[in-house]
Every structure is written in structure tokens, then in C-alpha cells.
Image (cartoon, rainbow, N blue to C red):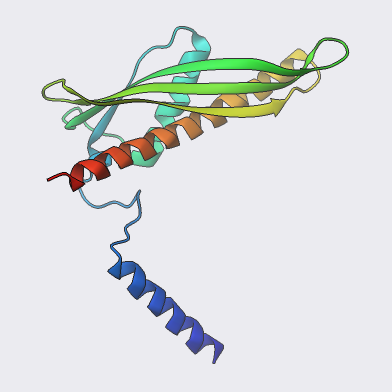
Length: 171
């Protein structure tokens, strides 16, 4: 009895989702999907940690949208920026928490013409507690950079998906 109710409910939900035009954002819809036809070009940052953040952003984008060929119709240029800010000080004037911010300033270009289609900025902030000792802070900072960069890349993907969805709605 419970199994029959569950199957009926699952079929009803499936029919409703199919009827409303639902499609997963990251679904593979073939070679015409705009996100699957976008080459990612990472610009060099001003220092080593900017480049480390850029590496993590590029890695996350490759994981999410795949690796594109040089013939992709769109190019996404990204310039990463890292910042770490001290929060809360102990009685010994030592920071007890840090904010790590990774910002990606990006521009979507038409690869053939070089025309700028859209510009934007995405950022994410990760806060971590500072462990005792300098090596603990370095390790925690590295983890914070990676987490913040991954979140930033996900936000870039959402902005790209929103842009392409709006473009397909235009007449």
C-alpha cells in the first residue's frame, strides 16, 4: 500500500515537473549549451595568492562546465583577487579570526569578434578561526582561499547561466 502511494506520488511529481518546463541548470543538453561552449581564460593576478585563487576558480569552472576547445564561441576572461582581513583580536593583540575574500572580475566575450557581451564581478567570503602558531594560520588560509574560490566560481556560473537564459528569451 505504501509503495503504491509512493509510486503514484513520484509519477505525479514527474508529470508536474515535465509540464512546467523544468530542466536542471547544469544538465548536459548537447553541444549547443552555451556554458559547454565557453572557453575560460584566467588573467594573472598581482601576487602569488591571487594566482592561487585563480587556479582554484579555473579548476572549479573546469569541474562544472568541462574543458573547452579553442574554437568555443564564447570566451570568459577572469581576473582573480585575494584579500585576507583580520577579525577579533586576543589580549595579546593577535588575530583570532580571519576573513578570506576571493573576487573574480569577469568579462564574457564573443570569441570571433572580441566584442564584450557582459561584464560582472563575483565574490565570496570565508571566515576561519586562527589556530595557534604561524603554520596553522597558513594552512587555514590556504583552505579558506580554496573554499572561497570554489564559491566564487559557482557564482560566476550562476551569473553566466542567468545571462544566457535572458538571451534566449529575447526575440
